[in-house]
Image 1: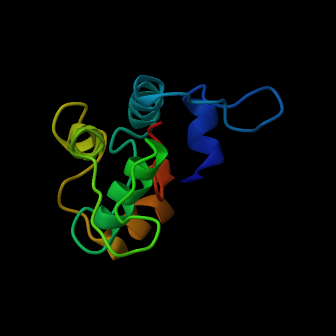
Image 2: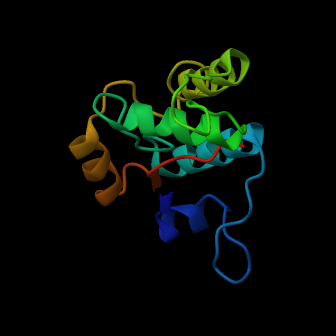
Image 3: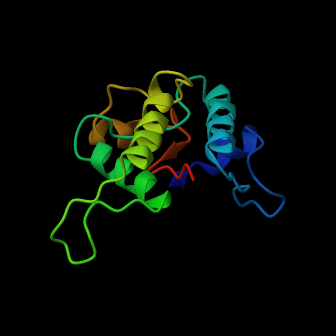
Length: 128
């Protein structure tokens, strides 16, 4: 995940050495995104919710839960429904419940929002 140092500093998300403070777990991440959102007055994170990235975001979150899509030999679908649902609910939460991400942003839009300083974070979010 990429972050805007100036916005994160304004939001109180940087450690004394200027690095991003740890955000461990979904609640801590959402809280940090909300703080950053208040600093921008716009979004907490810019992620592509329209093109290819939703699959990448799902897979990132799902794999952090130790979920597998395929068996080790690649011959069988072994999706864990409970873990998949947990990842999908977190993705939905970003746009519907916590409202820190826009549900209508494509890849180019996410880059533009981050580059213009309207979103302090972009890239794959880590919700583990």
